[in-house]
Length: 268
Image 1 (cartoon, rainbow, N blue to C red):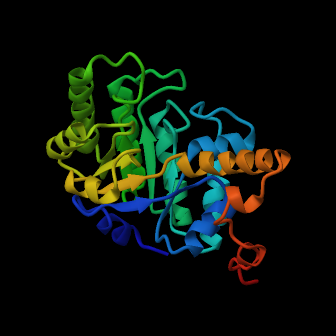
Image 2 (tube, helix red, strand yellow):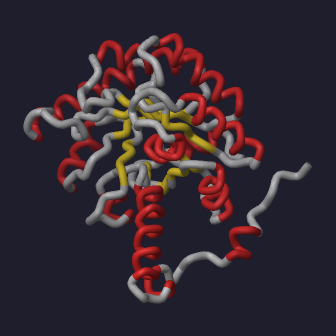
């Protein structure tokens, strides 16, 4: 497993690493076996697997269980906390400390609600400060949803809000800043220049990793993309079979049974 210091060192502006996001132990094991040194979790994937809503603060137990299971497989994990699973900063800090004790590398905490509204910046900052104080070794990726929520004003207002929130979170102890959304290159470059910390963005539909590197990005997350793609593959294959098609036409790169069954197991 990576150490928190080694994980922190992966965040290099201009030389981003790809952080794939798992939704259960199977996907985490698969990504780990594929050679990814660090893996994140996706709250959407975990919530849907559990039959719960994303962003509702309802998957703390499932996230903790996945972290514990991943640790037994020596998988280096950073955990998506949504908005902290609580509006009590002390509770958020205690949960982060529990993850740190398991061996997690970091956490991601966002500043928006399930209804798509931004949290009061004082509350969001207090959660960041609580995590930093309770689990100082974790890489604290503070996510600001200024570009993610609806009704956030024009592009200039969103940019100013994102930078202002980022500055507050960094002052409270954040290690890096995550700005999700589909962003144009000019906005990404401006965020990289204005935020004095490693910048994390989602995979962008029209930009390669090399292009994101040129814009100063330090980390690129897949978010829920892998989980949604897996569901899409299930639909595409079943529909093709019903329609008389061949599986190879839809999933030419599906792994073999042997490859999946042969994933490394925990030694007794």
